[in-house]
Image (cartoon, rainbow, N blue to C red; front, top):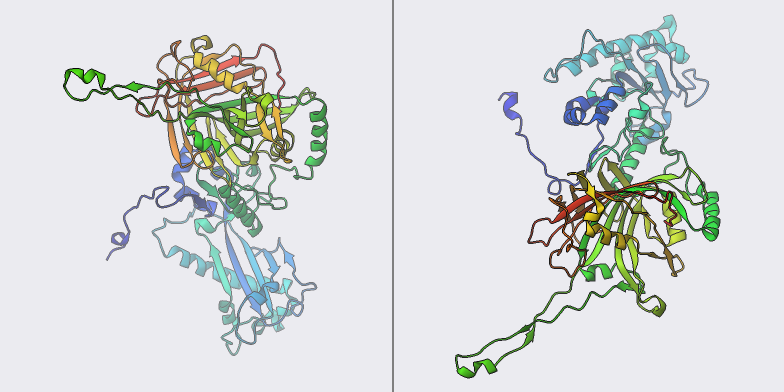
Length: 593
């Protein structure tokens, strides 16, 4: 049977059915073959593959019947490079012998030799269909390595040289115990030629470090990277870099941080120790002037959720505002055909289901976040929050008429912002892996995942034409309530300065899972075709807005943008979707966050 006939037909694997996540751990030398689509369509992949260079290598692993000292080495565990090609690097790895299993008596020494095999541009490797090429290359390089051993090894191992500069082959270990010992013992060692694309050694050439991708930032939502070509704290071809990249990939998949000393070279702040002076300073600032400033650019999605689902997210002492009592409907039924039927009626109230409650998802880019007294600087991080408006206190008579907003979920990409939010403002902040790509966001954490895609779509208009936006502003203006570590409530205000808005339609999708939704779901957001009329409203009692979703962008400070999307009931098509931009006429605004 010919070889082509044995090839299985292609099989399409579907995410969610055949796999969930993909870890790419193959050597980067093979990417041009197996990742051609990514390289072609993703600029970051093209830049990485072009910048990171690899080389083929030759290697020779030798076992000896005597220790390295008896071969003339002055120290154990010697490591040396810059010797004669092709095996210009040598390391004494006799410490690995206890991990190997040999018949008695075992070898007493173990050495690794390796060197680069320079590519010949005039004689490139043949196509993969030439299956005899690896064996031919190994035979050719084995002859070169044997010549190297007989010509140069005695400079490193004086004890290996016999009379007439001949190699004392009896010093090489061979469990088959050829007698008398000859150069045939060379073939009992382990020579290797690393010419397969995935086996090529990764070089650290100038300009390549910044082109390496991080383990959790492949640009593909469920694709994670591992290998010594991934950007870590080493950025060199070695087992340590591979292990660090593998741990970083595991951390990105799980949405957690795995502690590794010097794990990266792109975030050189040691936490949390380095945060202690800053936390002490901010604690003093919070005591005397609890305001802060910054810029936020975010998309907001407004949904309606079952009240029972949201009540479970609230801490003890808080509850949702009761919706207005629905009007009862009286039904009159006539029985029989007699003339007095009109006097026989039955009045029963119509059962109306409990109305849902609004919840807001915020996907934000925070910039220059700093205490109010500081005139410049600040932190930059990504943030995804779930906000429940119209929350009231259960047993606080003085606050019964005050509406608050509560954030059951608040994920940020910064540990510093997490600690500050937890300790100063009682926010339920958690560290997560958050990535943004233009107007799209994706998040992974130990609690769950969320993915979004937003696109601006339509001509901007004036905010006065969109009464729903004004009602959204009422929700965003509600004070926030949080729970401190000691169990007490703490309150804060966010002042966005939303005057002078400009509105623009958008569209998009949001894929939710736990903890944002009871079960996984995907929401499609459609743009508005025209501005809403004056009778459109946010009111959950309105029959025209059974379900809503609203992606919105706004920025605290000098310039703010927002996109709003409203959707009709499940049985209807999407009603409204728009974007707003506004400029704060008051300049920098104070806020607590």
